[in-house]
Image 1 (tube, rainbow, N blue to C red):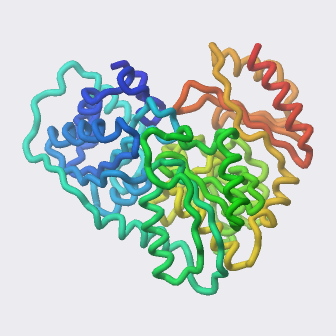
Image 2 (image 1 turned 120 degrees about the horizontal axis):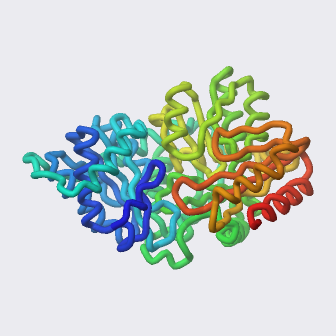
Image 3 (image 1 turned 120 degrees about the vertical axis):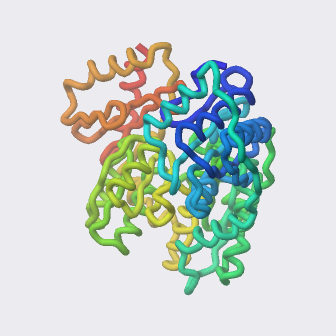
Length: 453
């Protein structure tokens, strides 16, 4: 197996080419040895390759004498929660998130669900590639912790005040990923608390074949079926998740997709109404809308690089109450400063049910004032050369430049961000403007031509 499966902060690769059970076993040993972990939470998504890879990781951890708390099929955020809740030394989630079905990988955290330090991740990589992992250590064990989900559901529902909520109909689309069983537990918890919401389930049962394609609502082609289902159900809100449901995507009652930065701005404003002067962390891909909402709410913006490891570190360092990414990752101070795909839709539904409002009414003004392109992916043969062409051609014309994450250039009315993906061999472009959708289209066309050379 090649070392290419070690990305910037996660493991991700093609099963059988970049990643197999032998390497997964070595990664398990390397994780325990590099972090000194004696108790590790383990979870897996519903990909066909996940059970065998999870078994191999567990065997590697046990070979280093670690106690493995195995959650089985779950979401990434459940591993984060259980790592903190059980007082474990770390957590490993076997998942490739939104990547194609032939891929798999691992997301790792340390004690308290904190992101691994870069040197710790580098040590895991080096140990996994070592010629001889050394003799095994005694004392390893593996056990299930089914009761953790009950505690997890209680934590998620603690973000919602159940009193005085109006009825809602909510269309939920799990995309045949891992979200279905966990959502059902949350729905039961809402019912027990008297929350008058009705759910219409779509693509709900986990299916490793992903009959409708891998769950990734970031891809524009994947959004219309959910939007049509929202309209057909007469739903007030549509919700969909990616494969391991650490990302949450929303549709309004008309079946229109809500752009990630507009949702981040909405939640930032809601948190600042309860915590005036608070810190909001966000990424720089499309920031004008979010920065405007934070300023209006009297908060302070903190920019962080895209990616859960970078965002979590910034959340912890700044004491932020909330953080959000354009890609629909949402982070919460009261959830270990980690991302959750279940808390955001509950918060938004709570806003709608308490105010008797429509999601469209809450974000249409932002749609008009801050139009954006959405994330556009490119696969150039030489990504660095493509970025250099954009920088050299447009950089001298920019009013401001920021290198927090990739290349960000701001002009008189529009702005772009171009960056390399941390998990895939892609360049990602985002363009935004102030009140002029035509400027977005022209900016996309100009950058696209330069990327293509």
